[in-house]
Amino acid sequence: MASAGTNGTNGVSGHAPLPAYKETPIDEIPQIHADLVKSFRTAIMWPLAKRKEQLAAMANMMKENADAWSRAIYADLGKPELQAQLFEIAISNQAVNAIHELEEWTAPIKPDVHERHSEWQPTVYKIPFGVVLIISPWNYPLTLTMQPLVAALAAGNCVVLKPSELAPNVSALMAELVPKYFDPRVVRLVNGGVKETTRLLELKWDRIFYTGNGTVGRIIAQAAAKHLTPVTLELGGKSPVVIDPEGLDFTLVAKRILHGKLANAGQTCVAPDYILCPEASQKPLMQAMTAAMSEFFEETGGKALNNRHYGRIVNKRHFKRIKNLVDKSKGEVVFGEKQTDPERYAMEPLVIKTTGDDDLMGEEIFGPVFPLITIKDVDDAINFIEDRDHPLSLYVFTKSEETKQKFVSRTRSGGIVFNDTMEQLAVGLPFGGIGESGMGYTVGRAGFESMMHLRASVDIPYEHEEAVSLRYPPYTQEKVDIARMIAQPHVPEVAL
Image (cartoon, rainbow, N blue to C red; front, side, top):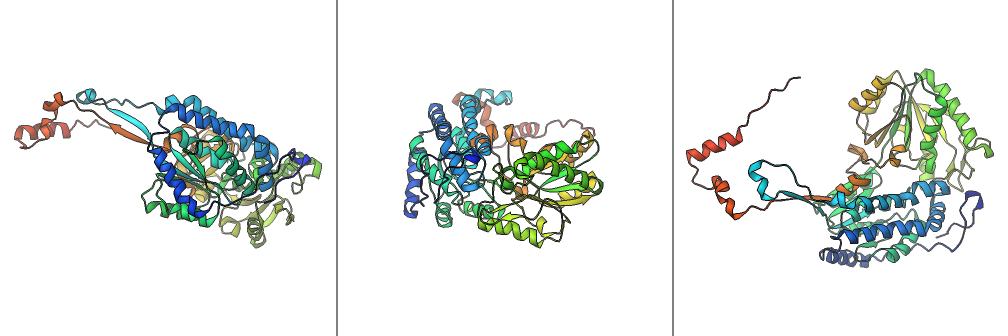
């Protein structure tokens, strides 16, 4: 595959050529799986020192190869170096944080129990699932591979990584570096496409973590169900932006909305997908967005298309898909122009005023195009959102605390952000979808907890035999009376 050469305008310099992408031979996949099953059974990852060693290896792999990662990401996605550093390579911070938090995260739980059980040493151990399969996407090829890996390693699992073939430069670099930094008894990597993924899914895993779209998510879930394997599905969907205009500074609102849409050319699972805005506020919002574009892309006359601070669509297929959605739309362009660069798979950001039944509203756009939908008020927006699949993120711009509480209590989404877009990812909060946008969690402690099992334990002393003798036949009336007392507690009165 072609690598990124020198590109001084992007701040990405060309040094050693990036490695070539190679698929993993299919007949090697079962042995990779078997090797990790064997090593997990030796309790190789039970010691916290081993987990910290592997987490540090991940952080060092990011840090020591930052330039190569940046070049590979640019080669695959045209992503500016600042975005590569902050949104991808900075994933090393999560590994470092896990190292610091590991003792607390992994400490067995000593629950409060009834006094008659207190001497039974009730304990909840946090144990790893076993061998985990992580299937990651192309849009953030480094972050969305390494983020679940941090969680899996912190929880003590062994892991097979399957990065996306649609980000071949990053995946090839990963294949070269993973064996150099990680213990091969703990972390292995498989490159390839549908055939290789299909072979992986035929094997029995202890957990599968998939990031991508709902169509493939269903395939993953069906394959996992054959072995009753638990899954985490980080999907996506159409994340709305709601404008409650009273008192808003449209200059700031426009910048913050565009930040979420322009990052990685809109190819982010939590990118704002469409805008719900009252009619009277649409023109000032579009004017503010035009002014923001002039500020962001001053050197190219307010146009993003050929600007060094703006990326592109990943490949021809996705470029044509987005362009077809735009071409089929019956809506009116109210921001931007229908300009594209088919050679680079790049397109100018657009806002198209339309309705809820437009083709643009039929699927996640995953590109730099906004449908703009007219709403009457906040209640209208809530009903519009709740009539559709639950989004991964919900962005509400408002100064009203009452409005905020309405959205918290009356809508469902993976996450909710007030007065900005995408910044929830910077805070380290639990991240996960609901319904069509996914199941399960990642990031920080929530990610760790998704990769481990709570194993309850008690140790009943033999000298406590009298205390448990109630359970043995014959069931005398005296025993039944005692059982009634235990089974029928006093129920407190609850007032509404």
